[in-house]
Image (cartoon, rainbow over all chains, first blue to last red):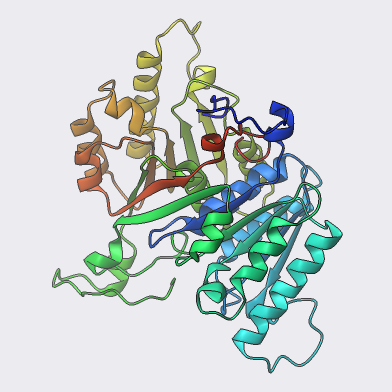
Length: 199
Length: 199
């Protein structure tokens, strides 16, 4: 419930307002569906608040999640809410000017370096680091460095990380963690993904 | 993965295309965050396909999820994707003309009656029945009737039901079920919900 009461009120010297407006680190993990879709749903709320939103897609395919991307681009350009900047590893990142012979590991690290620069500059108020749990899980990016960077990020910047195998240290550092559990999926019954539902 | 291969190919006489394009019943349930946000994320994909979308919010508060609502209204009016019709129980439903002294139970049933009419008329291609699991769980609406109506719905209409305690019969009838599990929530640490994140 949006107006719910917390179970405990900590003795941390902060007012309710101060505590309420702390920047959040959210993690959507687990084997089920909805990790990214819930993050993009969160982006709708942020957009409605007029917040600048930065999406960093840490996936190989530039086509994946094109529905969410198109929708958020239209919203960002509508002039009615916040702005949306959408960055795709699958297209080699928009800020990388060179030829693009880097490995996926290199590209993932380039993405993280840009996130660090944007966090330092307070470029966005919501960061969607989509599928970012994978390069952490695979050891391509150092989780301890990510946790420390997020822990010390300036201002009031919210960060959502999605991906199946979020490392324990990231979960420990997060304020809000949801695990999506697969109860049933049509692929189990031999059905392939379909347009408009899966992408 | 959007292009993933199913684990089994059933001997059901259908082609892959026929099987792929079967209408889906999805359920997002469990105590964690993201059930509705993932449903609205799904709506972004449907919008991107140009599908007509009907949202039925089975919640008391008319203000709840105003971020998602505003975003989908802007998208629906953009002329670039599908249309969005947003119906709110919290405002007494737009199609109910009378004074609005009905109980919440009556209102929930009125909402379901409209969903039935729209399914019969094939009004939408995606139905988001947000928080619809609650009136089922509370026995306000008969789950067996809902399951039968959904099982026999005509055409190629996709339905997503959200809500914490989805009845077992609905889960059994669904094609795609995700349970959102709460791992950690800021309210546990004494933090209240904040604008742009929770609503």
